[in-house]
Image: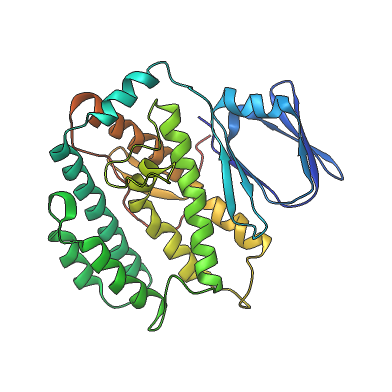
Length: 300
């Protein structure tokens, strides 16, 4: 499984050379495809060859493009990379509603628990109230405790008067970090034969990533914590360093039932548990626990 996040923010030509991605700039750098999890194309003057796209599909690499606002606007995913894609699609469509509602409750509960942890790590008030919201989540979250918790949480974290709809650096950074996580989760879903369009809770006909938007929820507070700890020196657009740091969150450690691991690895385990839900009617999902922002250390 790939572990590197490659972000390209200057003019470059990308080509395939044997088993590596060649990045031609002033000098040429080579990165083995098997090491790469995601590639982010963050400049208008980047050219790539068809063999690079084929390699991304072959190795299960998520290839992000960014728009004029430099926010991720699209992702290239492998096509039918799993041998049981049709079967899994039927299982997703036929999932029992009580099972889906219980799974959604587990996702919401862990999200709110991680938001409470984010407030605690940030030394902000409101932790007890967030923990109370988490304890009260029931099947399907019929009381919309997720929404109630979010309204309390963002004001506690970023201050009175903060609104997610405002055009400000913090919101741009949150959106960028969430988009990177969303693409990494979509990549994992496709690799395990799941269709990102068919969600447990999210079901918009205009959303191609409903299932990714379900599973991303407990991962979001990781981005929130990073943005709180790394405020902009000057309000405005995200800098290349800001974006690189947000992409690097894929290699920060979280807690999982199997132990401490990177976000990329945690996504794999979470997606595997989701696949078991559809295959075996098992509602227990393996979801991340926020434990800080320490980068994952590779053991040699």
